[in-house]
Length: 279
Ligand code: ADP
Ligand code: MG
Image (tube, rainbow, N blue to C red; front, side):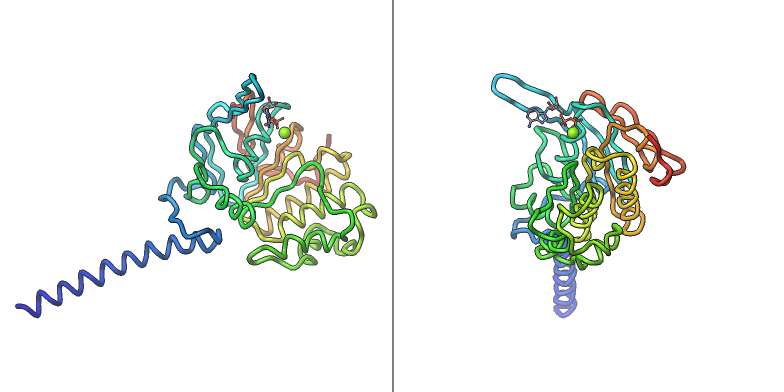
């Protein structure tokens, strides 16, 4: 009888240890991915890569209060190409910056792969940006004294599991321009270096804020083709901000922003290849 009780006790103990180990492993893998400090993350929420609910952003400049986001609810899924379309001042950059951990919402909830980003400390947001997100902006922000290869290598030097700079540059069609300085490259080529730099760390998410805003149509299309290829070949969830309705045709899903709210959503049955766009 005593032996039976002892057996049950040890079985119970084993079971509990197993569960603790499992939970510990889940937490550990999140921390390892983020290289986060040893504080436990909050519990899982939602199922999209990003799930936002009731996101509000209020800017205060002196006496003036600007409400840039009025309660945004959205879920973005793995591998999607999403175009965020809206007029100037509608809150597109604000939303993108909050998704990418460059800024935080005033209120509302936001999770990345089930883990809360709202309320995350600066250290966690830094690791999130460094490991999980690639950014492309309208202006390329390349270092003029470094070659294309060196500009990309700056980022691969601090990433967890980066591709070689040469591989990233080849993905955007710049294999023949690796040793050129930014001043020796056209605007479109410089933007493609910026894209190679953003994706060389193999981010889960690529966030592009008006990536063709400073380019003529033909050059803009080569940049969009590079982004499209990354989305297709690496399966990177890609968000492109634009106020150009034609670009919406290359998306899986279009979110229309107006006055800080998503007012409409459209799913394209067939994505139009970037090479076929005209404006
Ligand atoms: P979009 O990218 O669609 O042009 P933004 O997200 O940049 O729009 O801006 C939304 C609103 O928030 C605008 O009214 C803008 O002036 C305001 N805004 C954006 N950033 C700031 C800031 N840092 N400080 C104060 N107001 C801001
Ligand atoms: Mg903007």
